[in-house]
Image 1: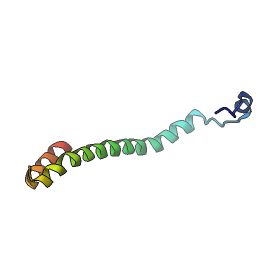
Image 2 (image 1 turned 90 degrees about the vertical axis):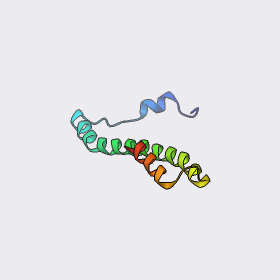
Image 3 (image 1 turned 180 degrees about the vertical axis):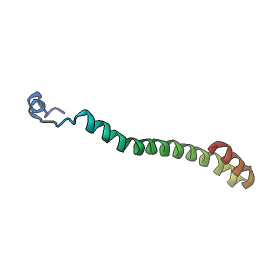
Image 4 (image 1 turned 45 degrees about the horizontal axis):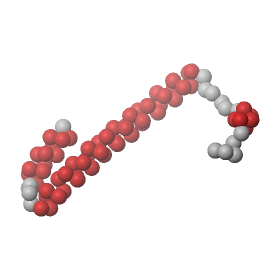
Length: 76
């Protein structure tokens, strides 16, 4: 960003929490971050499964019981 000068950065005050607050904050936020990561991984797996199975179901290449079996294998 061309409009920001080095002096602007030197003039900025930034509060830095102590180690105790960082640890406590991490204890609170880490489970949510892990859940978000797990949700994204599962979402990607489900999207890939959908993109693989849907055309085969529509074309009649596979039937619902076969798709259910494949789904269980992927999600297990």
